[in-house]
Image (tube, rainbow, N blue to C red; front, side):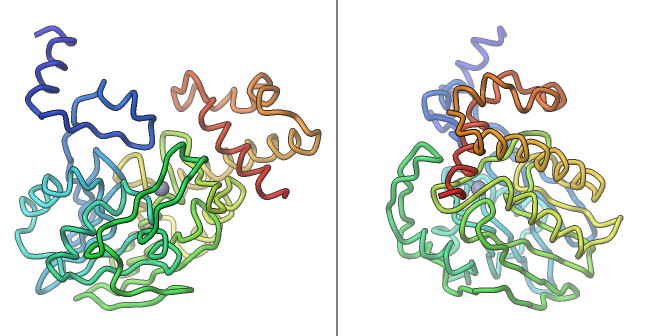
Length: 306
Ligand SMILES: [Zn+2]
């Protein structure tokens, strides 16, 4: 089958369910729905990726702990993929932040009276509708059953079978309600959207996000892990290494320094784009047009100077 007609076929077969991601909706219909892929990181931790943010499942003695839940329109697919690896029920869901490509299982699990835990700012945003120019869209609230049932301010600790879980809020980084999740007994860290591997990050500066603070958060996490820790990024491969994360931090810091200089000179975004401040990284990441990233990153720089 020709690539074009194959796409057409998949598109028709899948009934028009496309993953919009953070990309503008107009592009969403061009891509077929990608499969959800399970990657076993350790005896107890499996990552489900391929569409939406990376989801971690931790196997306990009586059921599963879930960190993030992908897109709402893939929640049933995700549940099937998870059941294929471990058929026991999810007992608790943690949200790394409020974005819809991470909180898509909240409504289905919440309706089944599963505990949902999130930072208080993430929980607040899941209850309201607001315009988000940084993301180029209006953020819609979840139905009440999807609202987190428990919130935290700084962070917290929990025990789940043989794993302890430590979750920590890092203020105003990718959003205003991010947390990263450490599983020291499994030597795994779920960084949520504080870390993006193999692509430029999304920066939700409308709610206080910035590349500078995202880079700082990577440094904060680096202090709490070891060389062998498996790090799950919000987007990208199932896991990356500490060395990878250090490289990403360096790249983000370099780009941010350049953007800060432009901001100091009062340069408009057009001048920033023309100066190509990401030039040497575009090739590595296979990015042909970094414009949307630069707009978000520069928007974040300007917002912080106000
Ligand atoms: Zn996000």
